[in-house]
Image (cartoon, rainbow, N blue to C red):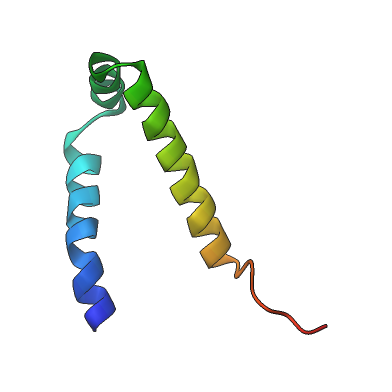
Length: 65
């Protein structure tokens, strides 16, 4: 239950951004902010995707084979 309450605000922000911000608006905002912001944003998104995939498939565990 605590995990649900901790992740609920993040889920609301993600839902809000998904519904109200199109991809063109997001790209336009990144270009307005500058190239370095765009690079940092891409690195963060790729890192989060890699982290989620590793959590989903259980990578990095201590396996005794």
